[in-house]
Image 1 (cartoon, rainbow, N blue to C red):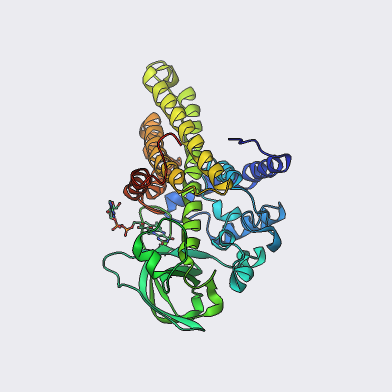
Image 2: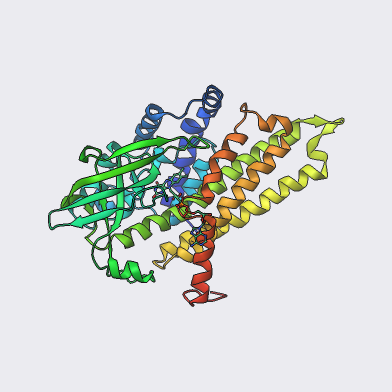
Length: 386
Ligand SMILES: Cc1cc2nc3c(=O)[nH]c(=O)nc-3n(C[C@H](O)[C@H](O)[C@H](O)COP(=O)(O)OP(=O)(O)OC[C@H]3O[C@@H](n4cnc5c(N)ncnc54)[C@H](O)[C@@H]3O)c2cc1C
């Protein structure tokens, strides 16, 4: 295993670090003020402005293939960038690492169009896979030139959702449940003007999600991503990346929280001395550092496996569940270090605590990650000691 970065990669990471220090971290006080007012920040306009600055700094199309003007960075470097951005405690990944299109690859005409960084800038998209029990099951009718979509789904608020749905038999070589292998799944982009509707859902934090309804929405064939029937592979690619990106962001956020804890423990005095002198506080800081380090290496390992062209899902699941649980524990612990102050909206901790709780739910719940890990072991997809 070689996590060594090339000179060029180190330069990119350095640029991200400078960008974060100069453009992202200074937004933190404004985020907290907005939080107290019950508003969302960074708002769309600020994110757009950040995206413009990121583009000027050369931080654009980072996952986009080179032939479409992107940088096509490795998973390892993307994970390190997510850690860097996460440390700012400002939600900013969409500023430099937006959208699904970049991860899909140039599989057909529509991907080639949508992959272009200029297009990426103008478009927000969200993968749209799941439905809640109250929602209606989707139906799809595929004809040579277009697909009719009916159904509903919950997803992050998009400009255009990417839907993955069963259409024709799949040729995916991945170990998949029989019904997927038999049925085949297609991915397609459903533009807003194609007629779907949404209802924003109130959430526990500033994440945005919507219920989306598709009623016989007509999707032209040029909006199919990849080829008809091969959407499952694309979805797995997307999920695979997400399952590395989430723990990477979690590591960065946990590092940012630990820094807050360290600063506060040094300056806050109780019973005549800084609370940092108390072993109870030191143990919370130490436990946090230990757990961050564990998840950091699990995440980088999963990214490295992906970069070797191997299937990273087993290691990505391990990293994802570890990161999701770790950052929530860390937020709770750093809140404790801050005492009553930690419970206020004056500082970011309670906001982050609410924000990161969803890491245990989306891109596969904890239970689904464990199911995947156990299945891989029991079916010998991965052997103990590999
Ligand atoms: C803020 C937010 C943003 C989201 N964004 C997106 C998005 O962009 N795109 C998208 O497609 N989806 C999105 N989702 C949906 C999200 O991916 C799902 O909520 C998640 O996958 C869980 O599915 P579910 O809600 O249907 O839970 P359910 O599947 O109903 O699960 C309920 C409980 O049962 C457990 N469970 C279910 N099946 C099993 C099993 N086989 N074995 C053991 N336990 C099981 C679950 O772990 C959970 O504890 C988002 C959700 C939220 C909250």
